[in-house]
Image (cartoon, rainbow, N blue to C red):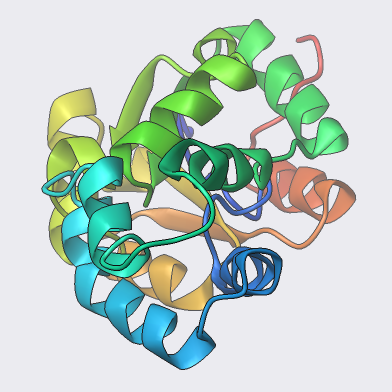
Length: 206
């Protein structure tokens, strides 16, 4: 079988914290004294459009938070949202080592809203690691929809069996596997290193 030449990487939960997950939203509810049930209901209704790039951050906040007068500003809420993104240093170090071998096409394959995604790309200098960003906000489709995997393969011109998706969520991996992509579920960096080595992917000098 041909060797692996393309690595698709989830971002949140693998190399960074999640951008705007349930834990982050609960913290926001507590900090800004929102009603959890009301906020979460509105969030769920807006989520697909938000992460598929059809709804701006300002419009998302208008629908989920600022549909009534608040004692805080949109800018204060945005600052809090962006601050939820933090790096996983060990993951980024290993990612960088793999990128520097120049043996693999390195690409992000992640679900994220436009403004948060671009903040994370800038803040954590992800262009230093990835050659392409197959983010839901650019492609208009989210994992685990099979179309996002097929689109990434078409654009990279990579055969499925020559690629690997690294993700922390089982359903995303399950659907990628059905598209023929090899998969590794991320738990920690050492486990990832071992599992990738089994597929012939290493950061070692050859």
